[in-house]
Image 1 (cartoon, rainbow, N blue to C red):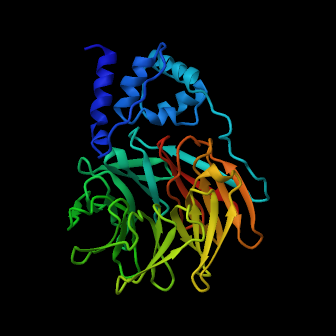
Image 2 (image 1 turned 60 degrees about the horizontal axis):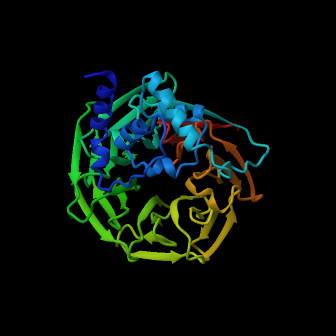
Length: 408
């Protein structure tokens, strides 16, 4: 078997779990040209070819950078593929971010994870300064020590597709098995993994987890339209359906009063959940077209959220019921995605820009400032503050995990 055939077999085998993720493949007839067959064989082995067609397009150097973060190709093949892509899918106009200058300073540091193509996501900062991440398409959890650059990966069951992670008070890492309908716990000291299957076969896709102050794990199930709670002491899992049909519960946080807040990615609503009674109250935004992926809470109890469909930053006041929004600097199609609040300043990203932008918003002055993200051909899907008040981020498409240091 020659080198090209071996490579194609390796790619196909490594991508079987991705293709089995439960979505039908949508393919596109590529233009004729040198490299067409290679693109169809290699790119389509791991993901839908419509991702190429629908991308912002890149120069040949940028295509090389992006593909090099996914798979290692021999140079002649990489040259042929990227030349074909740059010729037929060049950079599209209008996708650059609108960057806003300002007085604040930040710096980026990023690390490429060991297993390419895993699409790392939902990085989790630990009290000791290390970072965990979920390697969704690699069926793994990863650990980074930023001080040394040392990384270690822990393999999960094939098809687990870990989406989000959270740490308990003992430092165990819990993950949502988005691909096989499970919750798992990794003991980082021993490597032992304990798995908790969903008690209902309709609960197919655990999504984002958080721990409450009582040590219970809450999690959303996006396409199953459910919210779940797992009690680690007993392993008991309770599931409830959201009142709104196809609400697609996504981001989740708890507030200072112990209430659970959930963002709806399929409806223009926020939901508040009573931890004791599981009573759910929904708060619709004034704009029916709103879609909310994630939310964050400031010290005054305000619920900040990304209005992904309208390109706005939003704020909800639970005390008054008032909603207020601000247009994001890059406009309606900027697709705000991840969000965090640090020292009552709001940070989020514009995921549909290339490079995607990190945006800072000061609620006191209502002023924006934004920066292009160095490896900005990926997507930040979640971000959290570390113990030093900096941002921990990731880029799924470029297989990086990073820290944004905020100058104090």
